[in-house]
Picture 1 (cartoon, helix red, strand yellow):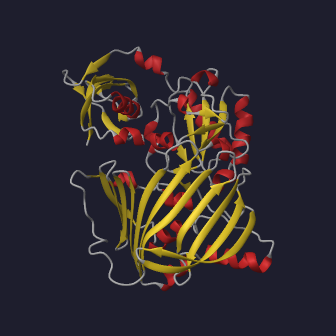
Picture 2: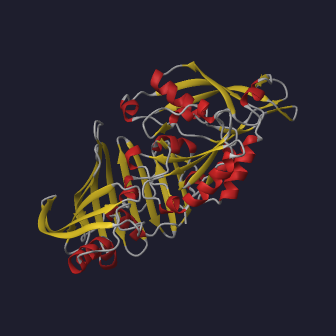
Picture 3: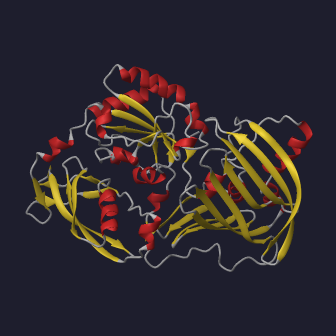
Length: 473
């Protein structure tokens, strides 16, 4: 099965691992407590309310903070809210369906139930999606400790574990597990590298009895939210991305050097994106190697791209990317295969594990794409001219802002001039009316990745120019 891209830090926390043990009884007891964290709580508690602060720290950077709230009522209702800055993602499981709202994208939608109420606690505790083959270095019950939360004291068992990723990176993980419920009330992760990443999870509210907050499982729409259920499907329709530009400069080598289009040496490329703790990615390496060997002799290149810190990249990875770049591409399932043409445009994206022959066919498909220069040679018409039908937007890449850009809190509308080719890709975009240089640049980058059903003149696909308004609220 493919690994779903983490949409919150909770999913990332699920990458903690345990496997075989050396000190049989002591380590077995510690492993049992770790594996059963939160699962015991869901099985034995009729209700639970939990709020936590998650802080991720990379050396030399400002911490990334998220506030998470989880409310569960057995057997079939759950609520999760993840707040980052002023942006909130809300997920409600109720009556057999999943309801999602995201204030950053101003969208909401529903989809058939794919989440169980207990999955919220399991993911929070790091007890779900655990790769079983990561070697355990140690597991110890370090004693008991008392934590005070919101004026109430909770007796906890402190568990210390250490494990090794397939890439060789080792992690230390400490948990304070509340003895009655089995829920971790505090966690600390640290990677054993020269420039370590640290993750701290601290529960600030914890209740297992008493009434739950009123109306927590009801759907409460933001005033500006627009319905877009398709945006919350498990796998987005990415085949429409064909022809959209891809910025290779968003990639880098493991040493930090930028990766430019010239590195392709006028050859198409297959980029296979992987992520931390992705067992299906590791399982697919043999197929990738087989494809890479055959593509070498057919004027194409193949690269494994790790999403995250280069220090954590598994052996054989040659390039690194960022979560923001993966978000712009719309990737939600790993591994994901992205074919890129000789002039840096996207072919047909596939999410999930592919065979070597399927990767080779993607390279052949992208090689046959018309070049952007060929599209540019065609004259364009404007929306509003006689016989001209405007292009129809079928994929809208989000405008991704950094924390610094969000902190500007600038509101208003900027206007972009866009040129869409007769194949449906954006081949030119520039600012007509500016709002702020940083916001302008982010909007231009997003629109370059939009994909359209081509516009027409008298029924024939043509290049079309028009204006686009981008609102910041």
